[in-house]
Length: 264
Image (cartoon, rainbow, N blue to C red; front, side):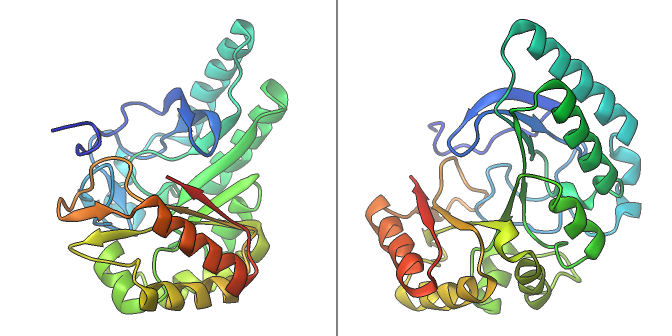
């Protein structure tokens, strides 16, 4: 099995990298979720970390496994100080890792700490998050997301049926609330949209048209269009050709009036 076909192991520890990212340059990853199990409000069929071990939305189920706000702050402070001494500061501090970072009950405080540490140790560095947007309808989470330079939020479908099949949300996560949260973010959001074919295809003309309509109603700053880069949880999924991705991006630009970039 090649690297492109394999899922990747869960991140161990609070920080990982810096790693070279297609979207964020030299990125220092922040994993504020458990090391032992993937905790997420989605169970996406394409996830590079494989299936979600704990599909959940209630912190009471996994809070004992989470790093504390203090532990995150101290780990990041020490790492940034070390990178500054070495003359190799990261270009982006990115919330990512083993699931959905905004499920951490102290996410707002951690985001505040990350911005403050960035300002003091690496002022040219950007702050970002890769999020599935399942909590963006909550004012407390949205306020925290707005502290970051780049809130990159997921939208892979324009239809509830496709959303349920592809993203496989935990109980209580509704497509309408996800879209409401994205609309509330508006131009403060960067949408990340992954297209696949095979066992499920969200790249057909009908699916793309429905998705473009929702993108238009959100009015984000930008849309990032991409496909599989590593092995998905569902081995029946296939990558969408770059030519098709470019067609989808062009449709967003022409029909929704939103800038779109392809990452293939």
